[in-house]
Image (cartoon, rainbow, N blue to C red; front, side):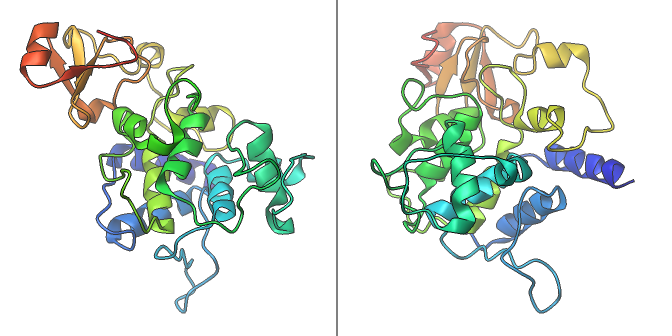
Length: 273
């Protein structure tokens, strides 16, 4: 019964689509945190006076808190806690060693120095977005720059231009919003969404409505939609097979390269249409 309930919840989350933040303490952040909590992918810091989770969404997370929340988003908390990990970092508190160890061993995070993780440092939007992009198969060595990671996340559609080089006051609420939106982001290697990968690995329940074989084989390129696909957020256009296609809700289609350019769009630097 619990598995069936969670399956329905995951389906509702994906159908609800992108959550756009206004403030980290907004209704959007609370909604994102509740959705993830119902799936077991996000936790609070305790219980409030009403006996419900206190998500503490107005507080800025440290790097070690951010990586812990990220490991939970991936449904890997048990694996992290039960594993044996080695890192070069000497500044990680005992309670977080398993989370940092898992993320480091799987290439999801790096330190701030040869022996420091920067555990007590406040996490930034580019850092957390980098965690998510690496989990989706993108490399900060070749696909994007970690300190401008929002450019690729805008392309993929799990952020929408709200983060940039001047972003300050990154909060736990932002982590919740980015995390729930990332469930519908597409993995570079497999072409599957993060939620589909979580389902396959058992980290999240399978939805009751199975996707068709066709949509699984080609989840990002609708047939007969145009020769080029534009991103309404970044104003870049792509070839249909580009690895950095935006989410479907952020797409516009063009019959020719010229029509895309005339509409004010510029070519993607990855697929070079």
